[in-house]
Length: 315
Ligand code: CDT
Image (tube, rainbow, N blue to C red; front, side, top):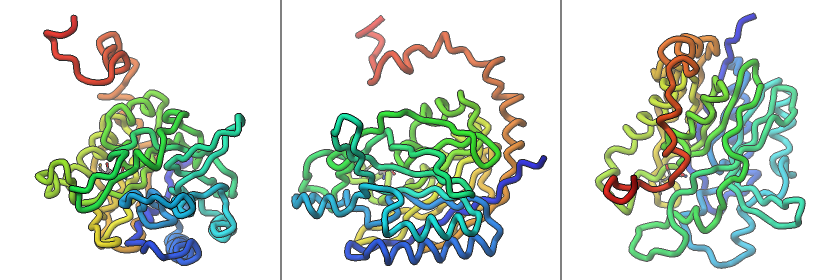
């Protein structure tokens, strides 16, 4: 049986602060129609795909803040997407701000991605682990990046789920910059990692990195793919949104580390590739045969400590 999966990276252009969920869902449905015409089986939308990237503002009105979160998924506004995807037999991955009430009644705010199978069943919800930016208003910045005010880190770790004929994992935006993200999933045999992102091109703490945003984006995902023998699908919300320019350059990356398809615009665009999940074996069973070659007895610091400890301060 072939394990070829036709994947569509559904890049979005800007979403204005005043755009409604209904406005956005029309765009998501249009990309879904394009995916159907292109015989796509899995369509991947960006991080926080239902609203503008609200962490760029220090919002103080609780009602306004809450208006950016989804207390349920599907929500009444996203139900048409769930229905249309199931009708077309297309699975999807969708990023959104999640308001989650745990069994103890506590309300949590997560930056989440849901993965839905071709028959409409939910595979999993992944909650972003690495929360970038800052917690308090910083006036000196041209715009804020207050994810640490609006989201807590996901508590569930990096899961890998049997789905779409392979082993599928998820990560969200800043997670893609950390090698541990890929390796934890690699150690579960992951064959396909889905990642939505919103990456402002201007990085206020070190503007010298601005010119390298494109390079760093592909660098980390290509390295993670190759070093773990997995497909990686990175999907942007790009373009100039409310005055802030975000990186586009969505890409589908093979287990070889090569980009096999990439966006050409910074607006709504479907990028399609046929992904042979068996290609992963070429890497997982040779150069990156973990069981044969890894040396975990020398990797203890990876989980034993958080920050770097110079040699003069610790044994
Ligand atoms: N959304 C997100 O995680 N963006 C970060 C921005 C860099 S830190 C302010 C990223 O890693 O792309």
